[in-house]
Image 1: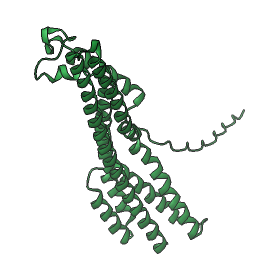
Image 2: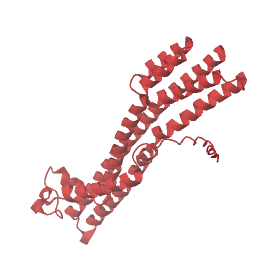
Image 3: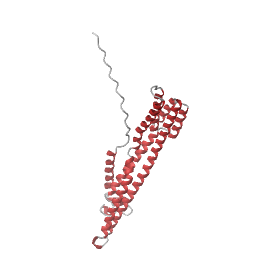
Image 4: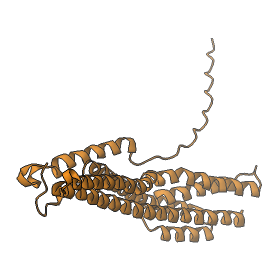
Length: 278
């Protein structure tokens, strides 16, 4: 009795590439930072040792800025949360974009790859991508591998091969950019939100100050000082946070634009080389 050989299972289609999504998850990070901000506000800035009579309901001691910040009111921990969020995500973007550059200078890498392409040495260019790594190296390597594949493809004409090569570069770039741009929206949003929250704290502080002046027809010095302190502390924290967020956002977007320009430059060189040698 002959045994029937098993029918080979059909080959599975390759799964579509997924967009990279590295980096911190703001859904978990921001609440943790908010808890840290409130704990620091209550137990560090609100420690009784910073106030007259060792009571945080009294005025701060002379020259004790911890007590002054505590008198800024409940808006302060919100602003402190904004500051910590900007700080943490800025550090994260520094690390992520630094890794995207790869192991060496991006400008040197671009120059080497273009030089190897001019000599039509695709294998050496791929090895250079392996040494460089990072987002630029990954995109260029993907394009070069597609270059080799298309060079031996007899079913497509030259125009179709160039279109396929260009599409490969664009898709590879699209997969890398989300990883670089992740959480930048949070930094940009906090640049505006911090100012608005600070304005709210300033208004509340001024309301307290004027309310102290109108109590019983005589100005209440303590209430007036507390109100002005609340207004100024919130203004300072909000403006400082917004300034840092604006600077960081501009810096990171310029770095990403530079990386994108380098990718586009090499992608164009690869297409021109393919058109010239195939």
